[in-house]
Picture 1 (cartoon, rainbow, N blue to C red):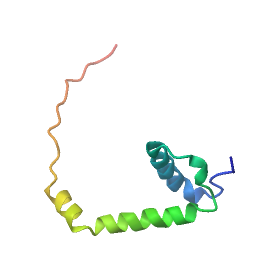
Picture 2 (tube, one colour):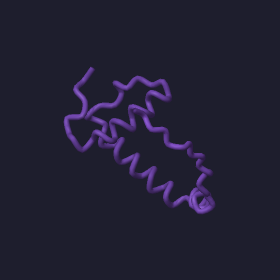
Picture 3 (tube, rainbow, N blue to C red):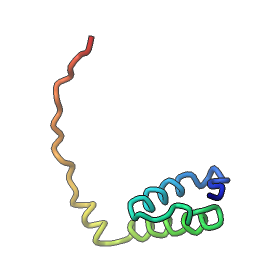
Amino acid sequence: MPLLNKSSNDCGVYSLKHIEFHLLGLDFSLVNDNNIREARQKIAYDLWEAANDPVLISRIAQFTLPKIITNPVVELE
């Protein structure tokens, strides 16, 4: 397996790609320092695109927090 994450700036991208590849059942060795820059740019583009998606903006505007049920605090001795 090649050395990963030579730059401390890429740890978030590696984390996201690790989650994505795990969920999709892909081989994580496909992600490496040679292509992590492109992965970072794609994540940034996808986030920008989602932030400007009218359907997503509408859904977020209509979102209400679920009712939170709290339990009484139990003190441990």
